[in-house]
Length: 338
Ligand SMILES: [Zn+2]
Ligand SMILES: [Zn+2]
Image 1 (cartoon, rainbow, N blue to C red):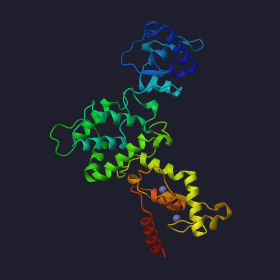
Image 2 (image 1 turned 60 degrees about the horizontal axis):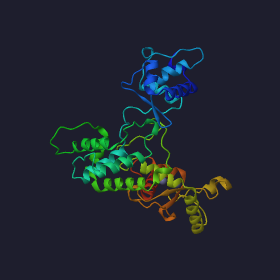
Image 3 (image 1 turned 180 degrees about the horizontal axis):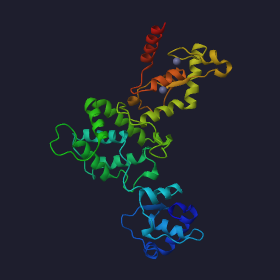
Image 4 (image 1 turned 45 degrees about the vertical axis):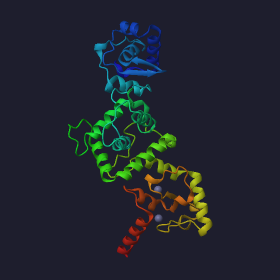
């Protein structure tokens, strides 16, 4: 007996009772308080999650409601249990800033002469809106204050206080801030163009087609320190390469010109090796570098035809190789083994 037994119907029954009695009477009845509460969000309303869990237990066959001192509330107990039943319980803390998000904030700080910005600044308010649009953090893991102007302004202070030459004490901020700041100091124009493209694409709704990872662990690609473009532009790039219509147009154009389809780096021909099963098969790779591919409509001329192996090798590490660089690698290594 305990928290582990509660079911979704029992929670829904407790929610109905909470609605009927009103928050104060419900908390009074089950003897819970609101102190440091985690809230359950349901149908546009907020509920003290621990009280809901305690009451839900009483809705189980032959059970009594749990009292506040019989179990502990919080992130690893009640919040986790309710989430596993499909409910939304936002964490109290916002998730850590990812590389893409820090790039956007750092760009703002740079534009502002490396000084922090206030939460009333229109640019901070705009960035807050953009960060909320990005498909980076699952909605279920966003706190109520997720990337609000206050949090964005604090991030600009963290970044500004880490810049060389800053004379005050550094504020919080972590390793990610430091890495991104260093990238901005090393390659300001490149980083600015990455930030500009991220912003533009977010506002144009370009990232809408990208799924939001379901949990932070699901997002298996790590924030590679050497990957200056960050993750979103990469995910966007891959999505465009997988676009069926675009790929078909490219392969048809290539076939028309060459009479067959083969890898433009190693000349592998799927049809030659696999017969009819490999007919007109190849992958397409987008050759415009990520940070300059602001153009949202890709044309066949922006792509080249590759076999699956060559394509994988181009993307295996950051920075991605150009087709010429990969060709040089293939030639050098084949010469070695000859
Ligand atoms: Zn190849
Ligand atoms: Zn590619």
